[in-house]
Length: 291
Length: 201
Image 1: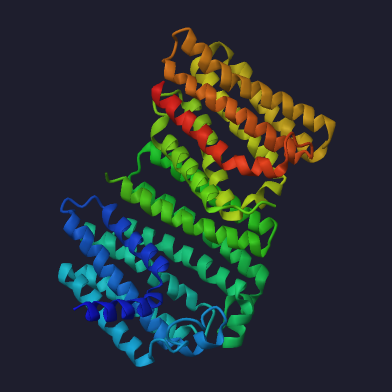
Image 2: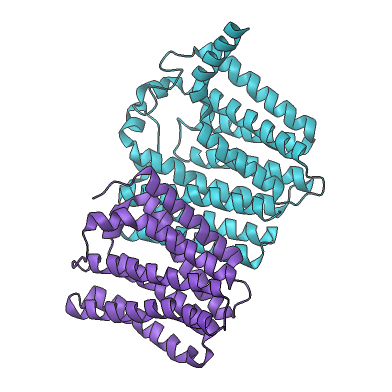
């Protein structure tokens, strides 16, 4: 028994880097925020845990499938060579089976909870793995739009589960994530420009230059902030929370304008970090507001 | 430049969370202008904490720091005067606007002695008001005794603001290293003092 536990825990530790825990955690949090912000009358801890569980499985599943498909380019980029598949710690077949099983479990769990919720969760997985990674990522820098749409699906799914339908607030929340994702991907594609070049991945900086990419990041951050404010209006924040939202959005605008006026990698990376904190903060705020 | 430690980050995060709490829950019931002045003050504290965490102490080299570190005592003192000292509302509002413009103008267009004197006058008036007004009101029985904590926060902000501003002016009172060492704790203590003081008001 102890040996089995040791073997399982060793295997889990090998798999752990495949899960991208921070990114997964943030996406699951958006799903929970989407669900809780509906103030669903049937909300209870069992459903909330089920949302977290099903989304975690679906997001981890799609992340593993992405890593399985991208193993050749991961091997060429300094930032990703140490990942479990290119480093040989996990075989591609093992990763493929693991990704398919976890994805199927996540989608099946979501479908068993609610058909609409399950469909949106599946759509997120499909957009992420098939449209973004397999079809477009190696063809066009605009693939990030689909990466963004995939990233917006957890919050839309959570909101759809809570409200029983696709509502404008859910779509606006998803749009906020859609506009946030490019700040994430583009910042990385500038920071690791040479890596992406050597792997032959078309990125915004390689196609349109750094200056235009910085401008897109700033505009995208501003749009993400605007969508968050619109969603907050839809959710019905109280005045106190509005004040906090105004302060946090003010910080985002300040950094976005500053990175446009004094462009630098440091300013961009700071904006990216703040935008991530902003997303985390606003999602927590949307969750708190229902208490 | 001093590297930011994990403890520094935790202290700054706690200060930011306290400021966020104050913005959401801690300033209800005050006149509208006071609420927005307090929001600006605690919002500045919150953003200062977050930006320090993200960029490290290097951000203090930004020329805007002097202006921002003035915004905090000015907006907080304006909120207090507007709420508790109605006879001086308009006069102090004029002082705040003129003082802020003067600090920003001299910082960018008249650096040197004029900028130092302007900064010292504006900071001193605002800092003394935040320090003395709550103490005076508590002693006169116009506010609960706990409101004194706002005055303690005022003393801390006065110290912090002046240290930072004179450092930015190139005339540090104590060494840069020492200022950076105590800054996160100072920010946390002053925010905590304000939150407690406003809660007990």
